[in-house]
Length: 222
Length: 222
Image (cartoon, rainbow over the protein chains, first blue to last red):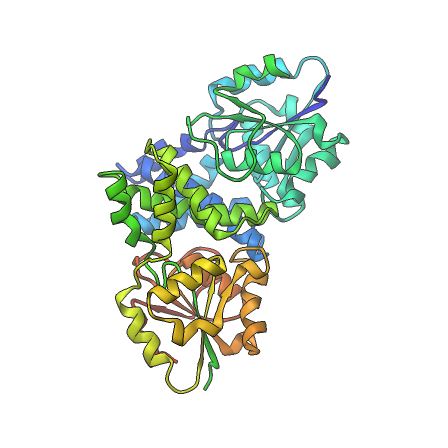
């Protein structure tokens, strides 16, 4: 096997961060979609800014903080109960329809599978269990919380090399986030970008090795 | 004087990055505003991502790269000439109406004034000259290019301390960018956030010391 391990990003790649939009829309009628997009954008922005500032705050808290900013921006008055309900919903994000089938195929034949995520360990464990992936992935849930800096910083990606005991060039990294695909390529992985949003390639000076439309194309390529 | 020096962010604070929207609209009719916003968002995002990846690319190039991404996203077919014209326009951004008066007042009385910017030295010099600020600021134009990492990383802010020879707590840092205000506060400056966009405070664990609506409120506060 050319690639000894496949490492997956979680949010946006296996789990649909916008599946909370319905819950958001119940709490803030008519604003669910817009709120969800602003929330996700700020959530990522905060991970980058905090990392650069050298002020790591875990992803559970960043998820709450960015939601609060999004609510302020869109004039959505929220209660602490509403925030708590949304934090809980984030632990039960829906899996993308292509993820279960692809993972089950890819798990055959002895190749190691792992998740490498910005998510705090407990929220990551919860969403993996909720989606019935515990058996396949529980031993290989890697969180940047171990190094206290977010992707795309190299120490975050290095976690996979160290945990799996495999060199970077024998690891396939799978992400739907264009910036994450760029960071992983810059680090040295072989990168599969699942371009769910039909977006242009990010202009960051590196390109993913493979561009796929869905995870179902992955088994034939590795 | 409590504050020995005032250090200004450039883009968005003194110079209006969206003043290129008209030029964009000439080239891509009806899409100028949307393109300008996407361009600016991506430009910042790229500075953070490249910094975290340890792949510094200067702001002139990042400005072109992010424009290319924005054009691809909005299906705007561009020529190299159009890109060059926009790169040139970025060297001639308009100054905000409140900036000239405030700077001239603040320059009286011996307090040091400086710019600390993500901008590459040549583009920074050009926009300062274009707006007639050379006499006031030419000796104190500080670019993160000297440290090859973008704001809000601490080494970027440290440039001001080292160049001005003043400790961080005696420097007032002025920015309209909420994330920049947070980074500067985290570094140790006294921070004045010019909240031009009437935005909520960023939820990054630090708050600016002062929130102003325009630069004209600044002279009375320092």
